[in-house]
Length: 442
Image 1 (cartoon, rainbow, N blue to C red):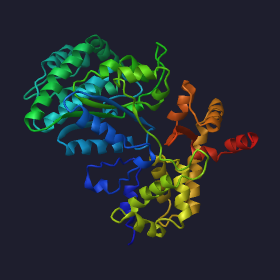
Image 2 (cartoon, helix red, strand yellow; image 1 turned 180 degrees about the horizontal axis):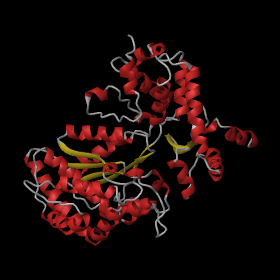
Image 3 (cartoon, rainbow, N blue to C red; image 1 turned 45 degrees about the vertical axis):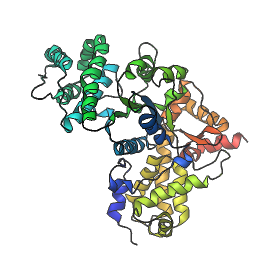
């Protein structure tokens, strides 16, 4: 079988998220649950469908940016739709400026996305509360926002979020108006959108409504005037309000909150006592630095499935010479990625931009060198010292300085039979600074 280069090139684009519900994308999907600590998405799905199908649930999902969370959440969407749930999946970054987010912004984004999805299947609501809100703010928004016809709530909110996302001044004015009304806004979302929507969905034979809010893990952890980080403010201080939606909801949240000194408060206020689900890296090494063959084999399949999606796993391995000059080149690609899916695809895509398959080891090394040097430039002096501590002890402490290593992807999280452990990004291990420390520490 010959490799079809244009299809392979397109399939390797690291910016593309697999929509597992789409048959064209499903053929590229590789199940990493055996090496990632269990069937995480299935656990979220079971909580909704088996434990409490009629009771609202709030579940939390986190992991490194680019590790595959969106792909897994879209797989969750497909699983739930197969069981007759109406699922609203949306990327919150569509409406929000992640550097500057408040609770009212998130609630409006949820209201917009849910109403837009319901309107798309012919469920038109008439939310009286939002009609009044739009009337109150139209003067300082300088945008006429009216609910006409059969209720165009999503269009009305869309007009507002489009203007405020690009204007911090307008955003502040809107927040000043909405903040005292947060409780009323939440009540209106529940009574005028969610409860009415669920009632109509059940009349149509659906089992309920699930809202999946992606990309909130990208909220900037910048310090606020109170001394709290923005992510602590949103998910801990205001967590009880985010939990107040009367439907099944799944939030993504920043990974660094798992190491916050107030993790217990987060778990109780937002998670209802249930710990967030974490999607770790695909392990390519064991704790003792030896190769982890099962993880390596699955990453090899991820790459080869992009080239030959219609053949089985063994046949893909037989076709490896169509893609790489030698098996060790593919091994090198998988190891240097650290099991970070988007990094792996980014390096592969970089090679395809330079030459046609079979990809050479020299081309891969050239791409790795650029990635390594760019990454090393971002490491500040004090971060090197923290990095060496993580490498020595394989743990991440609760201080914010350590959390920054996770956000910057200088350190990756893994799971094994003993639990969680942390390792340095393999590209940083190949820098002169890291090698010098390694020699000196012996």
